[in-house]
Length: 178
Image (tube, rainbow, N blue to C red; front, side, top):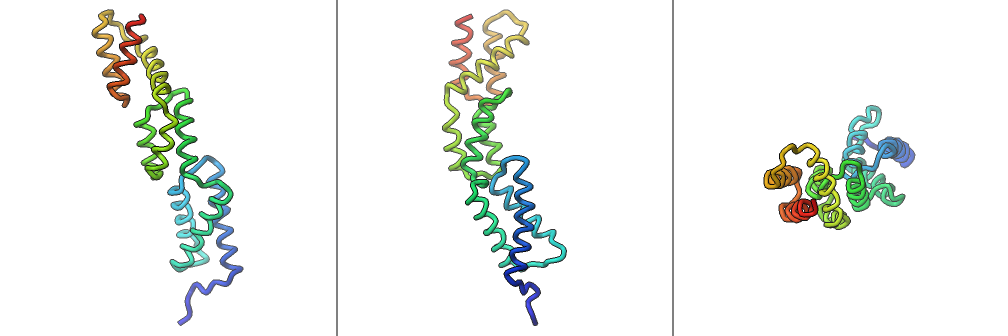
């Protein structure tokens, strides 16, 4: 019995290039994690109707495409995580460390890459973001009692995922100034 996937090199390159073009198109819209790329490669391979592939060939194509993307620097989870942290710090609606970490974990980024990227998120960044959040929240608080204001600010900021220690110091310093 002859193997159904008796591929010659020409067929292998044709299928590999087809899948590579699909993946590059997928990458053209926004940066992606390695997990997302692997999922896309497997999806495209699974939906090849005219060319059934054996597992060894599938793995070989997948590895070739991943190596190619790494070589041209389109696939780097460490860079993806660092860029995302910078984007979230400088965005119009900044996020705290916890939310960024959870997002990256859902994207299946390596925890070591996440931790090194989160080093870009300094306490000064977090303090500035908390200050902005306090300014916004103070506009909505109608109470004049400073204890109630402080309590509402603390609850609000902690519910947003900031740590109590940093929130308390920033709120105290903010309310002492005013």
